Length: 480
Ligand SMILES: [Zn+2]
Image 1 (spheres, rainbow, N blue to C red):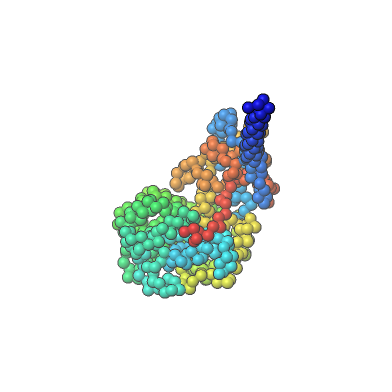
Image 2 (tube, rainbow, N blue to C red):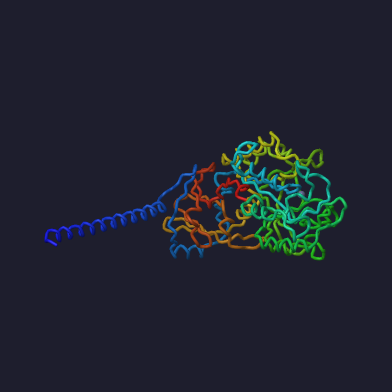
């Protein structure tokens, strides 16, 4: 090899090395840029959502702050809480009883109510509306449940008839529970019977809870159902009234089950007492059961009163009598809760709403979309009401920053507990400088992604809140 060619080879090697170095350097630079970008995004970006912004706050809490918070008084005092999540002024739920609902009907009307899909009845409303279901069907009616003429045992239920060994719609029920279209139990089943026999047993309750614990289908809400053959009902037993048939909470009865039922997660009970009052300042009231346990009762609007007589409006053809512009305006004005009772799937003519009914639902959607009335499934409404009323927190100011630590939900009925993030969603604190406020749960900083900073509301006050649930318009009939 000549000197010339050796020099040429050396030069080539150098060029190759410097080329590799250049590639490595560029790659490193790119990596650093990417990391920096991610970091700045996390630290400084703020995303405008209407009148609110979300941004991350550094998650380090100095020991001095922790000590100050631990030393501070934990109470609902000073009372900084806005009554409803910003910007809403009221909350409304539609609470639906599962009577004579088939799975096909359920899917059709929830697709319209909950998604924004194109449906035969127009674009879906995208509202957060839950429903109830049951596990057994023992009704002996000859009424048909749908437009195809199916009889009552075709109703949506976890098991076939009263046989806990035969699954019917269990898979779909668990699915719709997990995604939130079902949030209530209309007792264990439809035990209304014309022959006056009682088909419910404690054994059925035991089998039900075994299956529910296995599948994770565990609603928080219990809604009593039907006639005096529904011995499983409980909450308003009185030996002198028609409610003397209620045996679910009587430890001496063969129909006793509230030991299992409350242990398994039922928090809220509709005790069979309806009413014509549309709105409540507080939708919850305590119920003391005959077995010594306590549970929350909740109020539902179920009927009108006509010359002292009950005029039931809780079926779909009457929804325009239940929900009117006057009532919605009043609800906003008063700043209250409303739980409107329905039987969304009870009719047997297919899609449950008339043209007028659809207009009413669109009206309700307007109030929701304009930030006036937060339409929420019943569990969310009741969980919010409970947390808003019984949340205990500490507030300290340190180095120009406000720290609010949520310690517990001091629930006088269900007991005191440290809440989950979902338990406190929507809680909104009035503060002078929202962006300079740090929210903590049990002394752990709440992630910036979960916090919403609000500008002044109608009261001229700024606030900071734990974000309400993100709207979910997914068509879960497809995802099923
Ligand atoms: Zn019912």
